[in-house]
Image 1 (cartoon, rainbow, N blue to C red):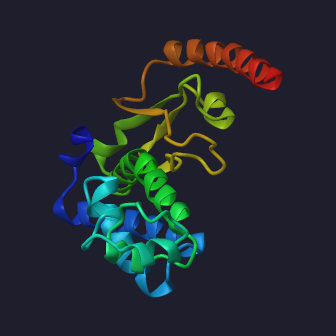
Image 2: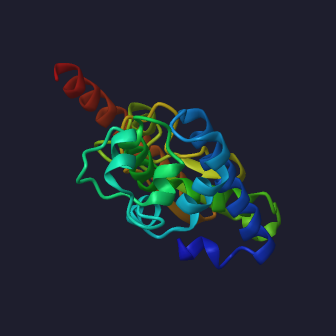
Length: 205
């Protein structure tokens, strides 16, 4: 991600951080897992803590009574500050939510940085674009766009809505001058063939 971050000004980095906060906060609010009064705190924790455990283990260790309130076993390890932010019987869902958020956050944050950079719309950023590199386990929509080159301003926010992968396996390659037409044409043929076989294999499962 350093290939993007060093291109942004401190003000642009703050804009990107605020946008990713908003994305995470909206997901937390609509999940129905957390107490509404704790949404902001959990948002900051997910965005800035370096690990899942850093979020889940905040505060001293919760006791057996708190674990039972959350529907967890007496031997579960969970931080009291995190526990108090979770609604009754939603302990497992809350931990799973944090894990999934971390799994998706890196790709989502990279997209956000690239889009904020593209909003500058100057001569330097107009020379830059992004090539999507989908993996075999990517969602069908991403496989259908494998090799596609996007301007920074038009880059979709990955993972795409409805992506079933727990962790987005797509790569976003920052390139200059949009790449060659011959390479893009070759990728289009490869993409169609690959998508056909992936769809066929997934239908048989």
